[in-house]
Figure 1 (spheres, helix red, strand yellow):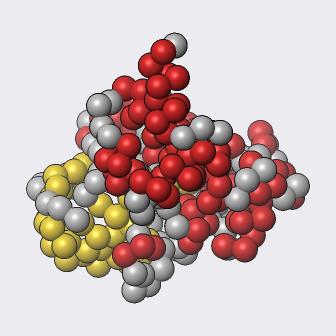
Figure 2 (cartoon, one colour):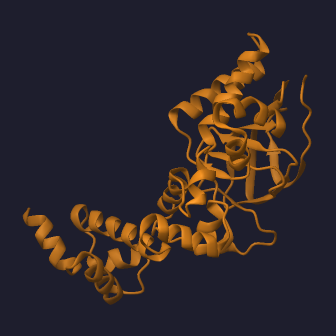
Figure 3 (cartoon, one colour):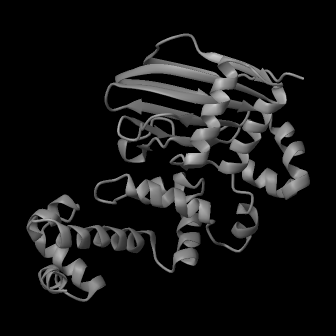
Length: 296
């Protein structure tokens, strides 16, 4: 039985370059878009069904998103190339620069997914995974599967079950079916940590607010802070600082930038702040560490 999807979609400043390519399948609808978004363009999307969005080009510098209505700029986060959006989760997007992009939208029937996946991983694990958003950069296998599926949407050449299995492979590749078990122990999953690592790495100075980090893994701020400390042994601020200082070490070792220039580039208030933070974590001043590194 072909599944029919519905979604509220309002856009401003986004223009399709050609009519979308779409195909209805058993339990899913695949839609391929090529479009351009102008600077300041905005979009609002809400679906009663779960969906997957996969971009075929980098959009992290041009498109930002949030799940909070009328969110302030700090609550927006960079768009990743692969997203799983649970049913009923709204999404607002904003373009910081004009950008041409292409992406695959997969709208899926939740109960169909449960029936398909439950025999392998268990119904409770599937239901838990379907409730958790996913935002990651695409892997080689994900992009390959998405490309094959787009080809099948545009030029059906095999039995529909082939396209449906491609959809199933994308779902199992993105969703985390161990999340429910690990959350019961008060810890973040590896998939959630991967999303946080990608988010922090997308910022030149590795600085991300607590609300952004919590939203990235679909948790409340208080629950996130507790689970993060349980998982890493550090607070989110301490973890970010460690990553910032790792980048500082790379700059000290490989660049000719002065210590003051590195402090500014990495978001420290001044050289004294940078030196104090570096010495507290690394055990040496930046100047001493640079000399030691050069002598090795």
